[in-house]
Length: 190
Ligand code: AMP
Image 1 (cartoon, rainbow, N blue to C red):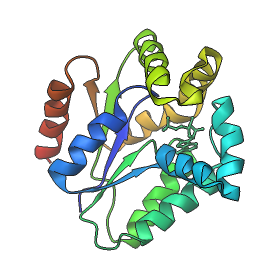
Image 2 (image 1 turned 45 degrees about the vertical axis):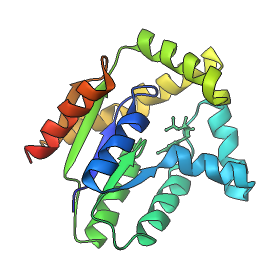
Image 3 (image 1 turned 120 degrees about the horizontal axis):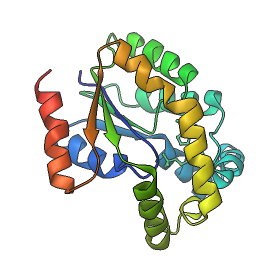
């Protein structure tokens, strides 16, 4: 199985690149942000609870997100592999992912980090907010909170995966296609 984590701050292009990668490598896409928004739109209790965190730009509790990822993986036993997009975002999530993948007799193949500076990210998110209607992309203080959460809770995972020799950073500014090729080069070198 090819299991890859697409890593990076909000607005780095994880969703865009995931779409391209999953069609090239025939993988299942797990975007915890998309799964949470689908729950919210369906009006489920989980979705309503999660929305309180999303609206403030805070991370949803680990147990909720881990449970969702586990259900998704169990419902795709035929998968060739998974792209984890926006997950894991905390150390407990990374530990839980290792356990879940071990249950599939597999593990993380590679972690690809999209590296983009904060000014560019704010610009992109505000633009996305105009087009997508996502409330958490429209308010600059919510966006700043999301960066704070990223710095405090998610960025330490970069060192965690560097320590395992799995992290590869790619400059996330430029043509979508050129960034995609850099990502593929790392995957194809495995
Ligand atoms: P995203 O679409 O990945 O930018 O996620 C939007 C929001 O959903 C985040 O700001 C969090 O509130 C929540 N979220 C998404 N993924 C996670 C995760 N792995 N852990 C905790 N909260 C998450």
